[in-house]
Image 1 (cartoon, helix red, strand yellow):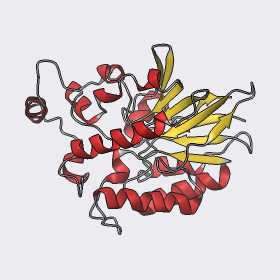
Image 2 (cartoon, helix red, strand yellow):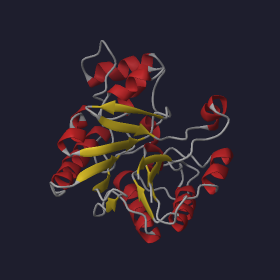
Image 3 (cartoon, one colour):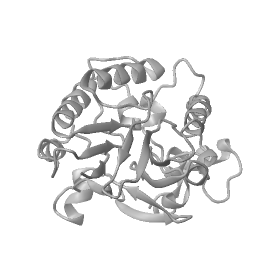
Amino acid sequence: MSLLAISDLHVNHPENRKHADGLRPASDDDWLLVAGDVGDQVSDIEWTLSLLSERFATVVWAPGNHELWTVSADAVQARGVRRYELLVELCRSLGVITPEDPYPVWTGEDGRSVAVAPLFLLYDYTFRPEGTATQEEALTQAHRAHVVCTDEHLLHPDPYPSREAWCRARLELTESRLAAVPGDLQTVLVNHYPLVREPTRVLRYPEFALWCGTEHTADWHIRHRARAMVYGHLHIPRTTRHDGVPFHEVSVGYPREWQPRSGAPAQPTLILR
């Protein structure tokens, strides 16, 4: 029985879709954590999560930015909060656990239990590039460098006035839920973005860190007793440690990224056993 994780499947790419179709557990008891960016359209998200939920004992999903995009080709044109709510409804119909559901408890071979907490937090432009002090300065520098996330055009915060306002609301809601986890339980925190800024330091374009998280979660892995943290988004699969806690970046990424690196897309990462 293993706790496995993967993210950034991006099944709108045929090579990645084929990879997702081949994902299977080693044991009927294996769990799979999916840390966002399954696809850009609801039909692709439904196909993938339906497939995975039939194969793995439990599937836990946290949304990425791509799931929240409203693209013109998608039959579902809902925006912002309503789009997220529709995705939660879809997941529940498939038996997939979402950030709106009670955190499930997973118990390993050693008898130790953890609360598995899928998070939906967004970002608030506080991962600013060197030499900038305000959000306005940071965004101006990003535009000058021609490093601007597509979220600025496709990820709508409706009915919130901005993505950072939506982020603030999600932070408040999520922190109250994490605070309610029994004190004798450690956690596995699953979010599309890293909870600390350090993993973004290796980005080729440092301005892109603006769309990669929030400084308000910098100590969550400590305060909420994380045994492990799972994230994606950066498309740089690796494991780092922060305050002794392993942070697993588990993304598959785009074919143009994984093909030169290994010739094959990443398999799910073992988090706990």
